[in-house]
Each structure stands twice: as C-alpha cells, then as structure tokens.
Amino acid sequence: MSKLLFVAVLSLAGVSVPVTEHAHTDIDAVRVWNGFALDAVRATRATDADAARLYAMVNVAIYDAVNGLAGSRDRRTHALVPGPGPRDGDPQAAAAAAAHAVLVRLDPARTATYDTRLDADLARLPGGETGARWGREVGQAVVTARAGDGSTPVETQGAGTGPGVFRAAWAGVQYRNVRPFAVADPARHVPGPPPALTSLQYAAAFAEVAILGDAALPEPDLLATYQFWSLPAGSGQPPGEWLRIGLTVAADRHLPLADQARLAALLTMALADTTVATVRTKYTYRHWRPTTAIREADTDGNPATAPNPAWSARAGSVGGTPEYVSGHSSYSGAGAAVLAGFFCSDAIPFHHATDSAPGGAARGYPGFAAAAAEAGRSRVYGGQHFEFSNQAGLGVGHGVAGEVLSTELLRRTGPTHFGACPR
Image (tube, rainbow, N blue to C red):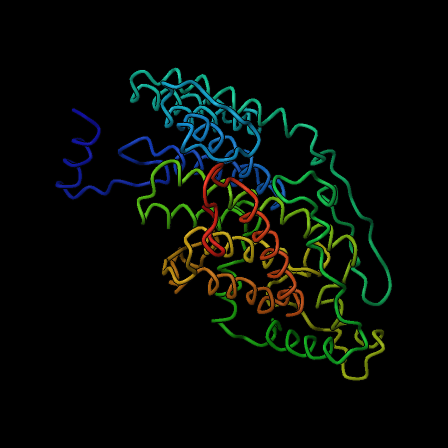
C-alpha cells in the first residue's frame, strides 16, 4: 500500500495522522530543507546570531544551486557561487543536495537524518543525480566560502559598571565583525546613540516601560504578547520566525521553486547581516537594561526618573545582552521589509504561531509591518527594552533590508526594479 493511500485509509477510519513541517506530497525542497534547518537550530539551542548565519548559508546554497541551472535568459546574479551548472540538472535535486551539504557540516550530529531525506528525495526524482552533484558542489563551496567569516571563535565583552552601562558579561560579540552576506558595510546601519540619561526622551521611555513591563502589575494580554515573540533558546529564534512567515506566505501563493529560493535567500541574507549591525550597536553603546535602570534611577542624574529597587521585568529576567538596540526588533524590521519588498505589498494577511506562542495559538496579521510592530512592542511589554531601542532596532533591520533588496539576486539583463520591489 502506498504511503498516501495508507494515510487516506487511516483518516477515513478516524485515526489522526500527524503532519510535520517535512510532510509533503512532492519534493518541495525549499520548504522541507528549511524545516530541517529550523529543527537544527532548535535542537542545538543556537543563539539568534548563529541561527541567522545557518539559515543564510542553507538558503544561499539552495538559491545558487537552483539559479545555476536556469537558462541564460532567466539566470540572475548569484549570491556566492556563480555557476552555470549542468544543462540537464534537476533543480529540486540540486536544491536538496545543496542544503544537505551545508547542514551535514554545520549540524553533523543529525547527518543520518539528512542522508535519509536526501536519498528519499533523489529516489523520487529519476535522473536527479546530475542536479544533485551540482547541488553538492554549490553547498560545499558555500561552506568553504564562509569558513573564515569571523563567526568563530566566540568573544565576550566583560561586565560594565556605572550609570547607563550594561552590567553583565556577554558572549558572541565576535559577530560585530563578521563578514556580511550582502551589505557592503554593516557599520552604515549602526544608529546613533540612545537618548542621554538626563534627557526628557529617556525619562518618557523610562516611565513607559516602568509601567508596561512591571511584573508586579498583572496584565495577561501584555504577558501573552511578550511570550508569543519571546523565542528563547530551543526555539527557531527571531530570524527563524521570519523565515517561517516567508515560507508560509510563499506556499500560500504557490511560488515556483526559483522564486521560493530567491525569497528565502534574500530574507535570510538580510537577517544574517542585521545580526552584524545589531551586535556592533550593542557592543558600541553597551546600554543598561530597564531592570537596572529602574532599580538604580537615583544614579542617572535625571530628576524625572524615580528609583524602584524592587522592580522586576514582566519577562522574569533582566536580559542577557546590552539593551540598545532591541535585536528582536531589528530582525523583525528586516524580515518585514524584505517580505513587503519581494511581494511588492505589505498588505498581505497571514496567520502565524511562533515557537513560543502560548498554547500554540496562532495570531492573525493584516501585513508584515503589523507583525513587526507587535514583535517590537512585545519587548517593552516584557520589560526588556525601552521604546527608543525598539524603534532604532526596527530602523536597523529596515535599512539592511533595503540595501539587500536593491543590490542582490537581480536580473542580469533588462529592467531590475519596479519601485522598491526586486526583479
């Protein structure tokens, strides 16, 4: 009995058949292999920075493998590996093999799982070995190209002291100097400093988070919104949620393989490069979190702020990296801007349940910007960030996305843009 017939029989008998991110009736290489990438990040409890790098490497490999098999009139500019590939290569086989080549290097503990899936994919693609050989070549080239990108070894910024300064040591600061995937210079996207501690703007943001983010003031809706977007270790991380949103919208619109690959590559390159600008900003300004700021407001020199030594954040923690800017916000700004640019519209409704959604319940959004705005505000509700850090983070991501959209994976001949939409 075939697998599909077996499933149908079980369904008619009233037996529930689980559906995973990998269950598809066709190869659907972009969605399936990104599902494995998301699982790898969850299983390894990767940081947001490491997750974004992994997603970008997988999707650059998929894109270059597929793009290299396109005809000369349809081939676009490459991301890392120029091609062309063999004329008779199967693009689905190439995409699967490219992703496999990256994942077995970045997540060797699950090599057997990846091998099994690739074998199954190729078994369903008669004659797919030519495309698979090309895909493996591309994936290996991507791994080689990124081997010395600065993402290792891990570096740490030591704990700070004094008013306005983040107090704990934090690891991962080597990402401030990581070689970008697409933008020319991440430093161009580093914003100016946060408001001075003695300013009215700082006092206003202080007052807002002191109320909205206070764990002592029960507010189930604010807590639920914070939890929905919290995405702690063991989740797909913030860049993974925007990748998932992009894959969902692409599936809803039945995008062909080449367009799926281009969307995922643009999105993940922007998310990875947003990491660099975000970490550089945090490292540069080293701003204190609201918990410290509120408890020690008597040291900030601002007569409009009042200390509350007993204050605790609704999130239940101070936060593990410097406050300015909000990384969740920068990733959300980048993700929303790339998706709106790719689809030439922000007004695309969708439903989504994050990895940390309370009860697994999905939320509906009228467009990408609305989801990004909620994700950013969730950090204020959790008492993790000031609103000026949310706004600056959204701006960082939006700026990175704009550069990526205007410079990457474009047509090699003829018109390349329609307004802000990549072509």
